[in-house]
Figure (tube, one colour):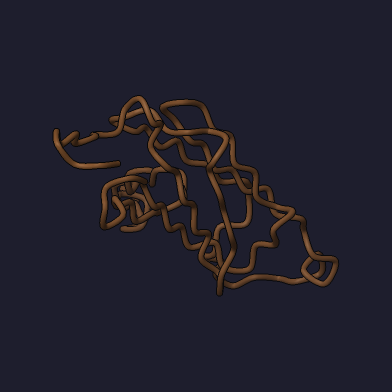
Length: 129
């Protein structure tokens, strides 16, 4: 009787989830806006698309393949090379006209102000505005 090789009996490891953009999300000190910081190393501004609605923001990257990489024979490849995207949902409406983004040292920084209707306002009687 022939024995099976031990590598044939090894269980198949579970499939990993597809890579996605990671982010830090926080409110500004006064609570008037949300900040999203997403590491996008090696991405150029024209490879990043931001789509905004009143309660969501979607960031997508579609990197252009470098000519010099086409002849490489990788031993191991851990950097995501394909398109990545991430949907962010906000608990309050945001002002889509005032959303701003900048790419700074490989970090995409998005400033998403809350919509005026959703912001808290304190009115004190007897004080001039």
